[in-house]
Amino acid sequence: MKGMKGIKENNKPFIDQVVDFYISTVDEAHPQGNMSAVADQFGITRAKVNKILITAGVIDSPLHRDIMELKEQGYETDDIAAALGVSAATVRINIPYEKVIYNGEEKSAGAVYVEEYRKREKVFLNSVVRKKTDREIQREIYMSDPENQAMLNLMREQGLLDNQGMLDNIDIKDDPVHLEPFFTVEESKLFKMNPDIMLLHIELDDEIPEEDRALCGVEHGKSISRDILVHQNLPLHNLHYVINQAFGFTNSHMHEFELSSVDLKWVTAGKVENWKKLVGLVFKNPLRDEDLDFWDDDYEGGSPKKWMRSKYTGPGYVKCYEEGYRNVIQELGNWKVRAKSLEELLHKYESNPFSVNEVLSIYNILELDPSYPRSFDEFYEVLAENIEDAATYPDDSTLSQPWVRGFAKELHYTYDFGDNWQFTITPKYDAEYLVKDGRVTEKGIREAVQRVCVLARPVILAADGYPLIDDCGGIDGYVETLRAIEDGDKDSKAWAEGMGWKKKIDKGVL
Image 1 (cartoon, rainbow, N blue to C red):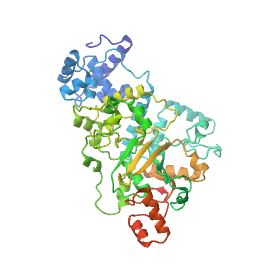
Image 2: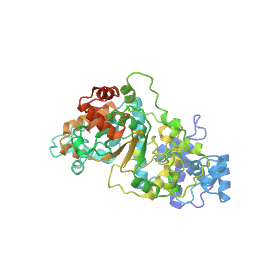
Image 3: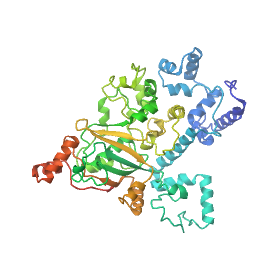
Image 4: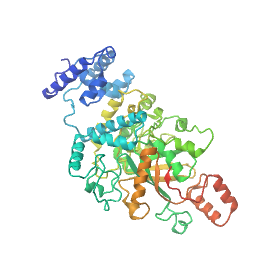
């Protein structure tokens, strides 16, 4: 076959299988063959199917010929993309394999993560139509694994499970927050959360003086905080509304998410060229129209809280595709970055160049597992493959945004650049710290997880401190306002209540 000269012999049988199956899919609906059917059959992406068929000489196009002509002239991928007015991903998809083809038999750790993500995403999207609960979705995914099925059958034989797959005759006194019955005893002792749910500890960075903590309703920490259960599919854009609701803000000011200095240095290796690669993926477009930041602020009356609640209620979440990778790279075109360091970037743009892209779901940015081997090379290798794969999906698909493997250990959120409310968001592997402090019971955790799964809304598991107040002058103004209210100042109280403040710490469903 054409283009097969450099391909290793052990890959050729797989190519033949792909080609034969592709030819068999030709029908009236797919006169050229069905790439999606081939991808499903062999467990590979459509981008790989396209490359394999090009490698075998089965498909061809004027674009492919133009790309190959420029490549033979010595042009690099980015230069070819610029010359032809297409994305670099499109160029890579249309270049034949040279030596080795990944056929799914030996998967890298990154490839396994991608595969699991695709599986979860597909089931989740289908659930919107079938109206399944997240719990049902998670169980369906779990039961699709033959090893899990075998393990459950063995447990049934031993009398540990009933016919519905629920734990029976097991003493869970030493396992107070065991939320998922399929974990091992060792895993359950770690207080591992339901895999669809993430526990976020969100805490105000400003430490409140000890003498003012009682005034602010703070009993357990050094500042005002919330511990919130959310679905991992929740985009950062939607998380913004969650934070506003949880802390008493009214979405009246600008905001942004940022990485910690440690995570920023890791994901870029301190290099401008790596930052540029991540624009539209991890980072927002620094050249974007500022109006784009307010694309979802469509409040027209009624209850502000009800309106805000609609922004983070699932199972499906609206995403701003204009902030997505596909739109960003088209807008940037042949954009040249003239900066020698990350520090210099801060002075190049009116917008923060390190503002995190809010199209990302929580699990696409935060890494929950502290043992995850943070391999920089693997991160970029998987990312390049995901860019190619995402290019094969239509614009209105959630899969058109290249998947990013979560890597950050924390996120920073700023609300109101005047009052400068700054928070640190930390994902928690377990709820043990809340149980030990007596702030939540095992029953409370189970009920909260169930509410998140059934209602598709976040739940405040624990709260420390009274709600904050918009336009009060930051933490100093906030403390002064509460002190005035405590001293009986009716005007201060009326003003605070007019801003939606109340001397009450709310927990439960947001």
